[in-house]
Image (cartoon, rainbow, N blue to C red; front, side, top):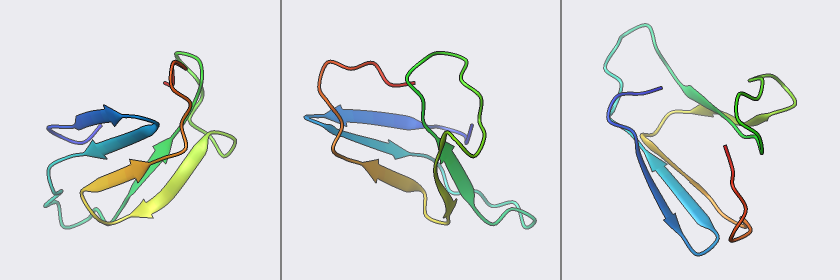
Length: 68
């Protein structure tokens, strides 16, 4: 997990942000998404890859559902 990860949840939207990575051999992040704790981070749970910014917004989430 990136350093200083912040999560902001608002009506059906999740905003994840983190400090910029300054390591020269690192070029992007991938996010995985599950509905149970300890889910496997694999192709089936891959939400998005190739993130080169320091934030991601995921919308269209259902209020009251626990996402992991």
